[in-house]
Length: 52
Image (cartoon, rainbow, N blue to C red; front, side):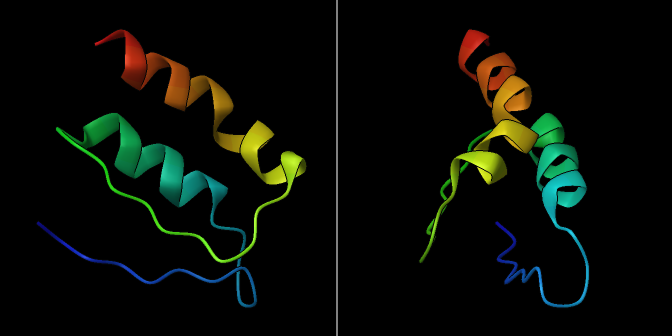
């Protein structure tokens, strides 16, 4: 299991999260702050993960 700490301060992380979700066997996420606009970026990938 790899642990990554990501931040939007330097670059948008939506693409990284989408890529990691597509390749993951399981996922655990912890977030401090969440906006609907951020969820929209990864929404379809999350739905695809739930279908597996």
